Image 1 (cartoon, rainbow, N blue to C red):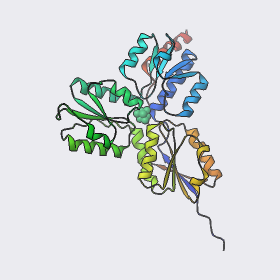
Image 2 (tube, helix red, strand yellow; image 1 turned 90 degrees about the vertical axis):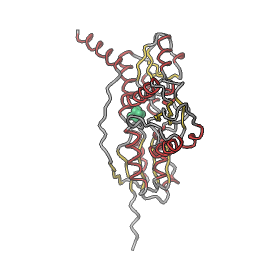
Image 3 (cartoon, rainbow, N blue to C red; image 1 turned 30 degrees about the vertical axis):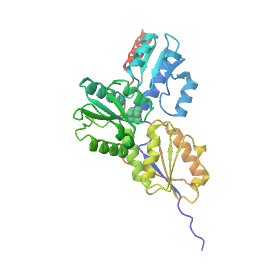
Image 4 (spheres, rainbow, N blue to C red; image 1 turned 45 degrees about the vertical axis):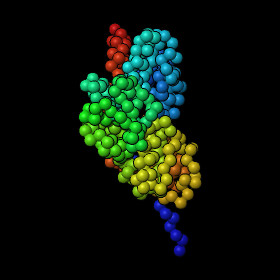
Length: 326
Ligand code: SF4
């Protein structure tokens, strides 16, 4: 009697891929290109994904690191990760037309930082050193904010008044690691206050939650996302911590090594919040060619949040539509 080969399957996580903030940021650049024509300058990667950036470049977006690279009088879009107030000031000085595609959930953290700084709190910002979002948030109140880069950063924290201190966080951190950092901080500063609402955004939390649910059943977990995408990197970490035998972050299907799949019967698949679905479809096709044609979607929550485009862009779109109607 011949043995039946083991069933090879893919557990496809949902929610995955684009969040409301990324969708809005990408649409902002696309609509700006349509409205004002190419080139449109974009300060930093609009979202942390290689494919998204190269697709927008092909449509006429020019990505720059700083405002000073943008010719005077041009249009510049600020990325979803947010910018410090001084970046808006520089744009004014260069007479740039600035469109701010900062995710509203990052803007919310900026507001919190401003409010607590105005009340003269010491603010402990939990986040990754050098990440654009952290640089932008810190720029709101540099004299009041100190960065805490995970539990290992707690020892270095010093505050003026232990009764007037609050923690905030980057939106794309590991939920569990952040809880650990906060617990360590509270041991040191028992009066530490928490933010008025979660700073780690819904999309980050939902993508981590479904990874935890599938990880234990997976021999390999693949997360589609770029290496500079904080939320994508965290998803791989969460999957491995939750029991996946292996976890890999890939930008494209061709990066999957056959050795990862040797002996595997269940592959978990998800994608970071800045990843378009077509890249996931390419991975599914690649896996199907290698016998993993059976795809089971595991859904934990139905995401419906949508953000409207930046006001400054909507206003110009309205004016253009009215002019066309005349
Ligand atoms: S990951 Fe969260 S904070 Fe970042 S753009 Fe998406 S919704 Fe906004």
